[in-house]
Length: 58
Image (cartoon, rainbow, N blue to C red; front, side, top):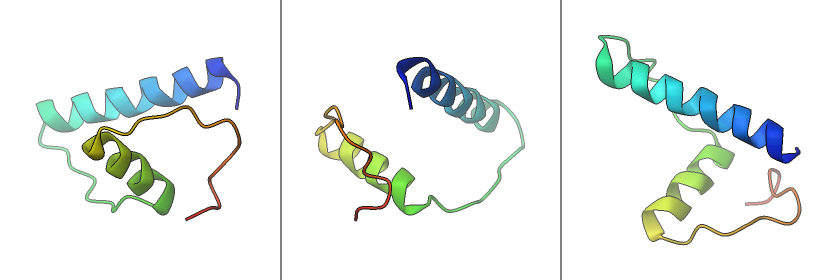
């Protein structure tokens, strides 16, 4: 994905989080492996730039 596409995906996720926080809506869906990797990196304070696609890597 290019920078613009990453920003659009991030904006979508931020809007979903805002909606979940301000309404009765809750999707209840579990994070997929890629999302969990991002959650783990944020929680560990280890955000880094990925130079290659790591979607299929564990």
